[in-house]
Image (cartoon, rainbow, N blue to C red):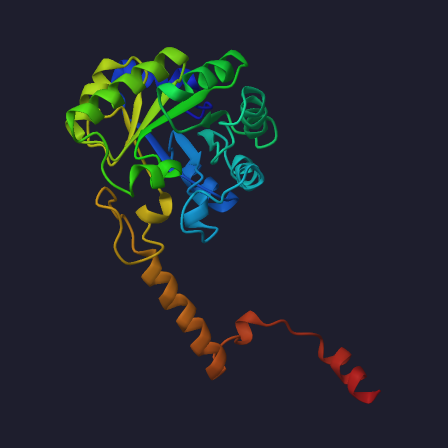
Length: 280
């Protein structure tokens, strides 16, 4: 694994050479350091931080200030992976000037190397303007959480012919607009395969089957930090919820029983100092 910084050129070369691209999410400094040290190619600071670390029921309440704050923390923990920052709800819809200003904040203030935004042909001109301004853009099609109310919930997208044709058309429009990669979320595997083969830019799948150019998962899902069930497309590589709960309960019990802290966790002082204090 090379220690050189991952760039948009790396993504293009990986697609050309058939090397799978690895991506995960991170929302803070310690997780970013762990993900980067594991050799993951790209780290997405997603607006999923609304659900995962801020406790919201959706991504809709996440603000630009929230995103910049968390992207800064992640960027400080990364030396190799490409950091991609999400543009949150309504941050790139109201005007071209505001869209460019917000994308610029992700790069300039946050320290990310690219931005990600949701949508298809309807945002192609915005993407084109960002790319023209020197801002690398990753697209996002399929299940787009910012549009979850419009989509009628969290469900697989592109299952009928008309919806599939729209996804293909949107993918072409985004490639023409200049995206360097495209996230496909909750898209049937055969359709994701078709789009991947059709595009020159790489596709990054999440619930889109094995034929995408790369894969991304929410790290907290992969690690089992929340316990319980999860989306069908998540593979759990650890069960940290149970391990953390066990450790916290053990701490509580040892404090209550007096087993912690023990002598090995405490600091002493010279006997003569203690004797002097006792005489006063």
